[in-house]
Image 1 (cartoon, rainbow, N blue to C red):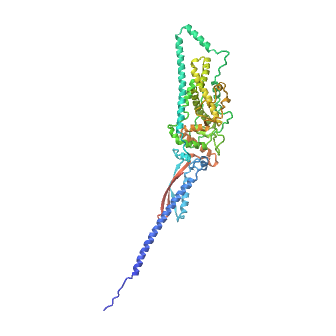
Image 2: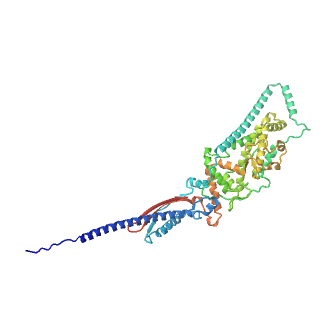
Image 3: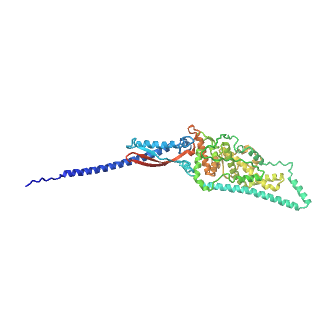
Length: 514
């Protein structure tokens, strides 16, 4: 009988192979989790580096623009007049690369690249970002109803004044024609008698005091120029000048000056016609509601002619900055002339409205008009002369209003008998000292009238001229000699690629603005 040896596979060997398989499976899972963790950590590092790059970029805002005008924006020209795109890109890439290599497990092995960034300019075809900075933390002034009312009053009173003069002129001409026709129908003897009576009536009494025509002095003082006529005698007009031909957003200025003859009704009619568009309101006054914060901002960061002391702590190319925004001329004196003309026109229409509604003032002017028209042998034009005298009175009162405002006083929009300054007796003996006005404690001050004019001017023109002053004032600093508002950056969008090796390519995108 043969012996057979039985071979048995031990259980321990099976367990070893099974445990090895389990071990490799667990290790693979752990390695996969590790690789996944590394992937997400590196991605997080790349995203953090991209965010830090954008934040670091925007943290380099222009200090003068922030300190002077409370606007955050990066100077893309680094104080020069050209946009330094390569330097800006290098700045973004450098910060990203340094932060990536400082991240977990990256070291110097990470290879970084950057696509061409997209810069959001502070002023790029519109004023959205510019206005966002200005309106920040400022409440919009609810002024639409008030401004609409003022404009309605202005239009109504200006048109009514021009229409009254035209009507009175037409009535006077009709009376002249009627009298001429009646005279032709009369007999020759009666004609001669009437003429003799008219001549006797027209001859002034030798004992009568000569009639004073106040229009002569008003014309005399006006011919000295609006600065001499509308400024107080001790008012020192700034002589600063600054050309605005090299600014980012050029805007033409406005000069207003015209001859006025208060003895010629055609000249006064042309004057009222020219005042129709002097305030330059844009279509749709409701749009000015959102512009209320801009008015507050302008009065905070810019100076004007009637400021008791300068509120601006930095050097400026012009002293009358608000006047420049309204007029846009290169010299303080020209800007002040234009603003005073607007103010004079505004006040003259409002003052004339008060005279026309006042029976007592109308009677006083009418009596003088009767004497003047009789002395000039034109009794049929008494109503026209009376209206021209009222215009001269309103004009003189307006000159007094301008002087009061420039001295820091106040003038109400619509005057009454208690706030009226020049009496008719003063008009008949007028001199320059009588026009100096008073303290003016009731109504609106010079700054308030400037705000009205700012709200009624074209918004684009206003914003452009604001940037002119910002540029020019910042350029007074040596390191910002070429500063331009059109180079200022409000936000950035950029894409980074980062290769960590072994298939660890990461692409991250970031976008940030103020």
